[in-house]
Length: 455
Image (cartoon, rainbow, N blue to C red; front, side, top):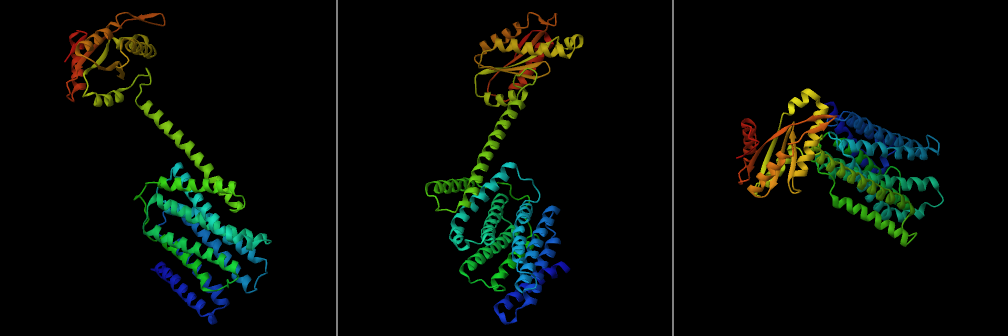
């Protein structure tokens, strides 16, 4: 209840200040120092008590940004009325500028409170943000630069504010484009747009020499700050959208940066030189992002191969065989399941290391006996499978050839080891029980000791 009153008080005080700005006879130190900055204090209080901010770091850093702006506002008011020395406007400008870094970081965490952005999404956001900032700086700031020649501090702040505003807008819009619009993001966007529009209007009026301290223009910053703090009280897009920034927007940002660089090279002096840095950084981030994406794609492909490969023999595993069976149903051929005979005593007598070497050599002999079009897989333990495409007669010949490969012993560490194999053959008739029939045939061959059995 108390916080709701404070939220209302901030809006009421803003209306009062706007009226005082319109009717200039009633404004003065009390309205521009105490009333004006009390509204910023209300925004800070509202942000501190916002229930929708689940990230404590985001909350504290946004409050920090508002405090920086409040310090700049207080110093500016005191300096205007001659209460503190004339050098203080540069200090207030610095405090205003310090508002932006924590604001950008805090708003970023405010928009995406529950999930961690992937590295590629972070790069996309910065590419999109810098691309738009580069364009905005080239189009909107160039006409203003000649008006600040000779005053280093004024030129620095005059350029820094709008560039910081453009970055703030671009990063916010890019993250909202990634997460999706919601009630909170809509209010937040309106607040940032109003705040940055006031900055640009202030810069323009300064250039024209028509800005006056304490006018209704100054209330634009208050409207923006109150909306930013109010957005933290509304439902965000948490868990609703995880779609990423549209690739078209990323491509457009890259294209604009490359076009501006080409324009700078072809027509030096037409665009301001400071546009060069964000344009180059945009393209640099693009190349880094491309490298990360290619490496990630390569890793994914490698992981998929490993997920379908038997580590011991290097053959495809059960998962790969089963996936191939699904596309094998419409083909003429057979599935062969092979289970080694007498392999367990090898492990018991010679150890698992020797048993692994036997399995590796079995895989090698089977591979040499099969045509290149056949798929040989190790299904686990001492069981193998073969997908063979061909006639029924040739499938049986293949089964007999595989059995013959184990007719002579293996030589492992000067020991001769002899094992056999039972093979079940299931001809492909288009039914989905191919694996089941091959398994039954293999167990029958092993149980009856007949070597090869077909079902």
